[in-house]
Image 1 (tube, rainbow, N blue to C red):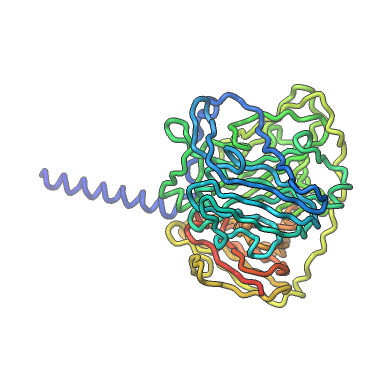
Image 2: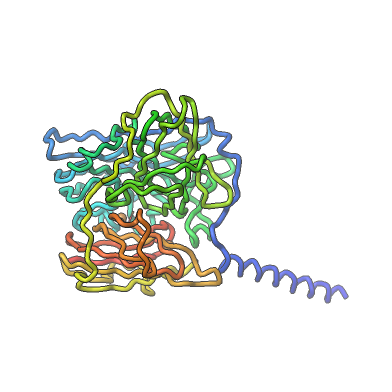
Length: 482
Ligand code: C2O
Ligand code: CU
Ligand code: CU
């Protein structure tokens, strides 16, 4: 009798175990969606503004920037210090502001006790200056890329790119913005006073341990699905507030998270206008109430605060989960932004004609969990996967192959060394806000996206999923332009 009972019990346990294993492998969508009140513990801080990095070259046509990757400490919750990393500071890095046509030199010092790289995400430079995994900088050493800015006004970013270390180093704080300005952005009547009516907004989710300290300690699920946290930082602070003038304000949004895709809204559901995508200004502002942003994507948006009274507040929220998450709060002041109209025209973009493409390449992103591949391969530093002829225009057809019962998960596909245009998503025209320059594009399970670009920089470049745990797991390949 006792034996029978034990036997029955074992079967029940095995069945339960199998169910959870099954659920884990096939039905896992977005990891932990629980909300905690942990953010209420933090005293409300003003939105931290990364400094604008001083250009040390007095020549207006040249710039020299000094960056040091270093260890730091960040107090996310009052009284609890987390070990972090930052460029020239404790967490994140300064904004590098450059102009089209400018000759730029960066002196990057590695002050960490592990190797790192400085990747210039979205910048059109040769492979040697791109800061990919081949450009490792040993502890205490320097790396000094030089390049000329050869692309229009945009909000780009920089972050490390060491093989298998990217997720950890970015998570711990290594990321910063690059602003490019040009003649067009100079003459446009849009907000452009840094920290006055033009604000950097870097959104990241983090996991705090029981003490409230931020540590990169991914569980198995984080490794498979990309890390999701239930503490949200904007420029390194929990639910900060930002005083904004009445009138029109420009927000430069970067999703600097490892794994999470956001759906941003204003808490009063009012409309805002996207004016730029990853690689620069759109042709016209795109009116929207929800903006989807996957890891590494940038969007510049204009928000009109003219209808608010002094002291009114409105929040930036994420509605990607059922729990509406408040990320930060805008407090409207009695100042004026000086810009009161949304412009009708922004930039001229010459569109590639798919008929001019000399080649179409296929890329299949596949897998959830242990094996994440592109074209059935995982990253190998010694293997060049694609050879591209310099100056050729090509179509890249990227498919996210369905896997598992739920079809798998969305992957943001990123291409180094270029800005591209989206031809179509499953044969349909892309949404308005994806008709400009892009370098990262979210691809849903089962979806095929066709992009087009010409390869005007030489060298070795990466293409990969920008869920950083996926990139580190090898969902990455290399192409060489000769
Ligand atoms: Cu944001 Cu391979 O980079
Ligand atoms: Cu990149
Ligand atoms: Cu991925």
